[in-house]
Length: 251
Image (spheres, one colour):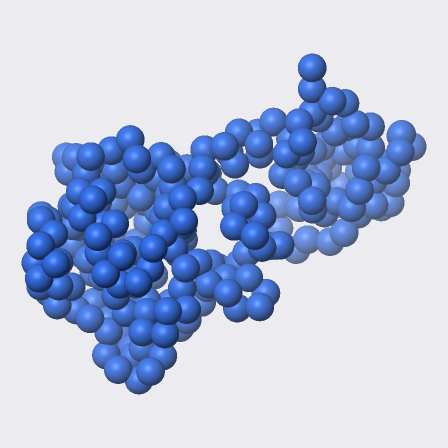
């Protein structure tokens, strides 16, 4: 399912061309057809009892335009800031649908590691969740979100190697644990605002870590300032708020 051209002006591979490539590489696969799906929740409802690992596939980029395709188990809560740091970047944002089509030849909802077959310039790097290693079957869309193709881990790694996209493994589960426990160095931070904030409790996180904090909307003094934080309100806006914090180490 393609609705555009690649960055070099050529048409992306179709699902059937991809499956023929897998056959030519000697990769055994099994493909299931279903209604088009655009979210993990829709996929869970429609895929039936297809065994093996199912994933969410995140097409992200940094400020300089460096692109990654991150393949995570479908139930992972992915902290983009922690993920960016793990891959050697300051922060990530999601790539646009136009960029997605230009480099991976798919539309939103059909993002897949099979898309690297369309990465004619080798611009997209790929990262795989360490949790995938626990499964003997991996499932991905074959460039079309109305189909799911099951392959072995060895088959997918052979495909990525043939496409000159050797993956980098990342322990996304550990990034989740760090996000839940606070700053990556361990411990907790208790903060109260020293500048004006919006009404109601606000959520904040360390720009240099992954802590989720709470502070009151009215200014109150505390201990030494632990670092820059960013408030995140319920709405789409976000602005910097200077806080004073008390650091408590674990153990």
